[in-house]
Amino acid sequence: MKTFKALSALLSYPSRDLQEAVPAIRAVLGEGLLPRAAVAALEPLLVSLGTGDLYDLQERYVLLFDRSRTLSLNLFEHIHGESRDRGGAMVDLLETYRAGGFDLAGAELPDHLPVLLEFLSTRPVAEAREMLADAGHILVALAERLARREAAYAALLDGLVAFASADAGTQEAQALLSRQDDDPCDLAALDAVWEEAQVAFGPDPNAGCPVSRDILARMDPPAAAGMH
Image (cartoon, rainbow, N blue to C red):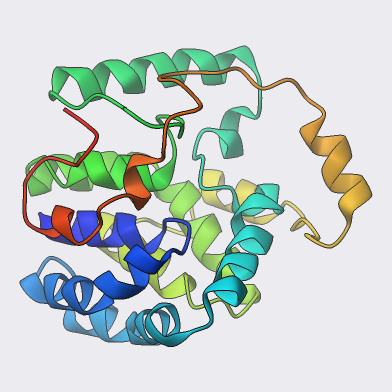
């Protein structure tokens, strides 16, 4: 479904290409995968990305997703941190991608939510729902944390939560929600957190992120540009 490709683009680092693609993304979101209410709730994010100052949009993105570990778009980080368990889960996810004919060609890790959404855009709806349901507790936590910060991105996560029928009342979701949110302005704490060694998975980290390239062109073809 092209909707997943559109949502992947919306969660990518803001760029001129993304801004120019907003009308095409808006059209794709109307294909019916998400309820009308969920699509309507995305309009403030679409307007902001389409008309906002690019540097302000990029700064906001970095503060939310790069400087706040509790808002990391790398899903396994929320349950495995940098433990060896994350490595095993990452390998399993890579094998799932490859079995579906989907290979990473950029710097992002396999568990990066925009990358997962790119993959789901090539899969049957039932399979996509099942995979997102498996990560439902993480999606619930991200949606709630973004809502606390009054971030327009919250509507996107809310849409994924609704699609996956994720339950905020599960023990797993409540455990994540009980964690204190990071302060993106506390640079000393941030440095301490990111001093942990990170394991590299997948392709050359010097390659460009496949999610942020050629967004307009990728609204039509079934496979992502830079991936095969």
